[in-house]
Length: 152
Image (cartoon, rainbow, N blue to C red; front, side, top):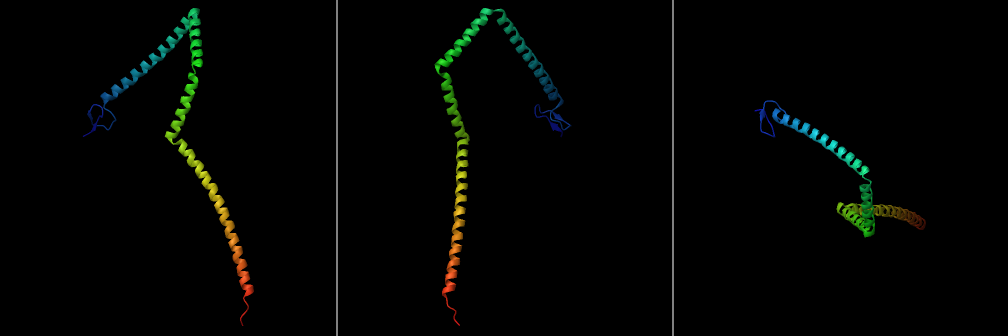
């Protein structure tokens, strides 16, 4: 038994990813796609060029489009939509941070930083206490040795 094409179940003797028939179809599809993509790009350029030419030849249309654009912009600002969009953007950003764990991550980082400072302070205080204990033990040892008379 050879290789079975995953697309059409055609059995071949060679170990290839697709049978010759499907490979030709894929090649045709890629070629067709490339041609269609080229046509689409050319069409977009043509339509853009022709619409600009049309607008440039019709000053009334150009002026009317400019007035509409200005009116839409003015109404947008007057409506307060920009403020509402900013509020929604801010709230959704905060919510996404919470959902993604960003807020929790920052809180954990802050706690770890506090813990590091606390550990450093604790280690310093412990070292000081051990040094004082050592000094006290030396003094006690000196006092004990000076108070004990020699028994001969």
